[in-house]
Amino acid sequence: MASEGPRPLVAGNWKMNGSLTMLKEPRLLAAMLKDVRLKADVMVCPPAIILRRVKSVLKGTKIKVGGQDSHWNPSGAHTGDISPEMLKEAGCSAIIVGHSERRTNHGETDETIQKKAKGVQRAGLTAIICIGETLEERKAGKTLEVVSRQLKGSVPENSDAAHTVIAYEPVWAIGTGLTPTTAEVAEVHAHIRKELAAIMGAEGTATRILYGGSVKPSNAAELMSQPNVNGALVGGASLKAADFLGIIKVYT
Ligand code: PEP
Image (cartoon, rainbow, N blue to C red; front, side):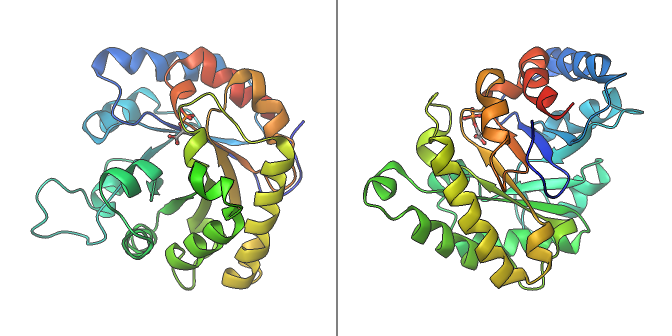
């Protein structure tokens, strides 16, 4: 049973996984969801190189496609980068920004992430802005402080609910099989909701807050039933249609 609030979103982040042989998974997912009435939006975020192919496999279905990262500029001399406008042209409706792997492996700061989120919104897409504390920060009792700082630093001014999603992803829970307790998730999400109201006003109430970090079919129902949890950002368990479906089914 899912909690009340904005229409949930279950988004799958394939990260640097997937090749043309993996196209069978979204095809399978679409077939499995064909006659299912969902109370949530579903999205897959494949690597950019196969985005158009995934989009074409999902044509005619309600499953949306998103990007994993983008530059803040619409075009220019930025070798290796992709702009939000390009991802929009490839069929994306949202782009993840500020994933902890970008923050850690690419030194992205809240300032960079805010610029990226602004670029995504400029293109008319939804920025899925990731935040979350490290294990050291949690152990030091700094979780809420870190989350507040990241929100204030990375959510662009004048953001609205249609173009903003927050993904709370404790860094120590990503890909580890560990998850916070449901009480801890509820505490952080309530705090994020309060901070969003301060940053975004009334739009903050309608903004979706996803939980991410080792979500799987066996724990999804419990995590998704917490107040202010409006869906999930899923890594590993989004790679196989059957596992992803096991999570999505929370919203039937
Ligand atoms: C993620 O990286 O966004 C994520 C939540 O990964 P996983 O589900 O594998 O922990």
